[in-house]
Amino acid sequence: MWEHAVGSSSSSDGGIDDNRQQLVNAGAIPVLVQLLSSSDVDVQYYCTTALSNIAVDASNRKRLAQTESRLVQSLVHLMDSSTPKVQCQAALALRNLASDEKYQLEIVRAKGLPPLLRLLQSSYLPLILSAVACIRNISIHPLNESPIIDAGFLKPLVDLLGSTDNEEIQCHAISTLRNLAASSDRNKELVLQAGAVQKCKDLVLKVPLSVQSEMTAAIAVLALSDELKPHLLNLGVFDVLIPLTESESIEVQGNSAAALGNLSSKDWADPNGGIHGYLKRFLASGDPTFQHIAIWTLLQLLESEDKRLISYIAKSDDVVHMVKSISDKNIESDEEDQEDGEGEVIALARRCLEFLGNGPRQTLVEA
Image (cartoon, rainbow, N blue to C red; front, side, top):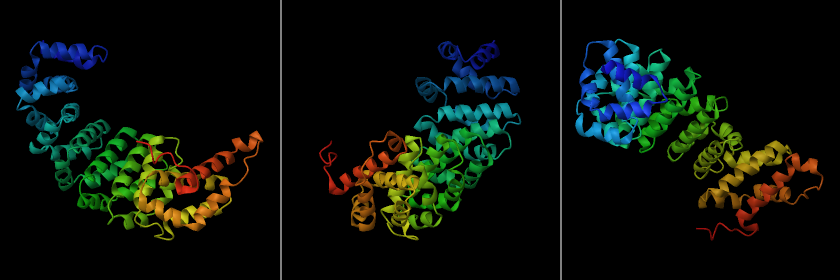
């Protein structure tokens, strides 16, 4: 009877909410948790699936937390099952539970990291996906950053970025790496040493927008560390960040500009001329596309409100002079020129000059 009820809860998405609540209201939770220790693989599968569905709902997670103290331990145990579909559902159930802070900590305490790492390194895509989705949620808690790193997750997560075309896996992997780097400079350095930035640099221009957004966000987080800035610059991240400030995705634009801003506020002119050199070369190129990228990047940096960076820019007479000469061009009334993008470049140049005090600035009085 339970198998039938639980089976229906895991098989039809349409009525999944109803079935989920019916099971909960019928008092199924304690029975489902008890049946996790059944020796019947099908029963294990149905019960993990049902509990995974039940754990999607925040109020159900609260109920589970209050009444089912053995749940996490049982699910951790099932990640070592010899049946992939059971392992998969156990990791997904833990992933849903790990939407809550309490469970993020409890999974680590229950020694959930070693089996998750094993699943992450398997060759079976659904297992990898469920494990990396789970570790992403667990990594949200600052207290879990170091335990996850110490458990050996960094290299496998970096490897996942390039070993699959699965967008979801790539997103979860890089997002986890970003979470792991969030709180301490030590962890940022370990993420860098594991090759995360090099891998992002190699892949970021070729991956889907959702992955680009996560990768640029990760670089921006790492670029907050003054000690790591020279390393990031030497890896050549400018080469990818500058074109990405023109991405069609607002998130990618913003993350790339934030990363550039974080890097540039430390070293405006290093290495090899730094971002100053880039802007100068792009502006002087005479190529409308390069000029557009340079002006757009400059505007993003000015909008960052980083006083130190804005002062570097304002003192760079060569850059300001080139921006001024672009802004002084007359926008032709000829429509074709406008569509060519020249009009837009001129408009962007004028906005840059407003920021630099050559025009009125409204944002100073904005709340």
